[in-house]
Image (tube, helix red, strand yellow):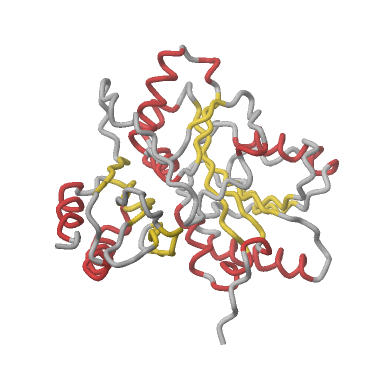
Length: 331
């Protein structure tokens, strides 16, 4: 018999911390470990040619640290991640470890997608841990070049629920604004915050519920306006809006078909949908080929109903998606 999923309150929240080499992940992590914030954090870190968490800090902190030294979490060590999360669960359940959340730091060259998918592919892990959010650090000084040269840097931006922009003191305000505009076009649903020396308030890193289906679909309405200084980034986003309801069956079969074909290139997609005949809004989201839907709150009597979907991916055929979605609207 399948286990019954526990309520969110009982689950252990997990934050995935990603960002390109040198963006300040370890600085931020060290600060989280040192700061007196009252959270007990188990850190899963993969040292892959990067400096690990400072040994001195580990000794002083009460957090339980699990370090993985045999490669990158999201490729060679993906099976290990499930095993380590399972071991942490076991030790926490029998009282050997005491922690109330997990932070996974990926290597600078990692695509966070497979790490996020771990929480949907393994039932035991998915029922115990709640994927809270993916936080991406972006180095303001080096990001423009990194985004041009490395698809991993672009994917990290595409997956983000929140973007923390570091080293803004090393660039002009104009350069920071240009980078911010570029990041918004790649991922319009992730708020961008500037951080100095990893100095982000804990509230901006933990308990964001960016993966929660009922979280607000945050879109920056300005992101489409500034199209100066065009970059042809591999990772792009587009938005579909409609004031007509969807036909549920048609939409489901269209999206299932598109995911079969374009799933590997779809990084994140999320939407609030008005479905014909449904008094509640439907909230849906997906990562690559995994898609899930949930009932949101009822439409209020005088509320103007509409649908809003955002797709973030690599070289997606926007025209095919939009034409197909138009076809799924109730006639």
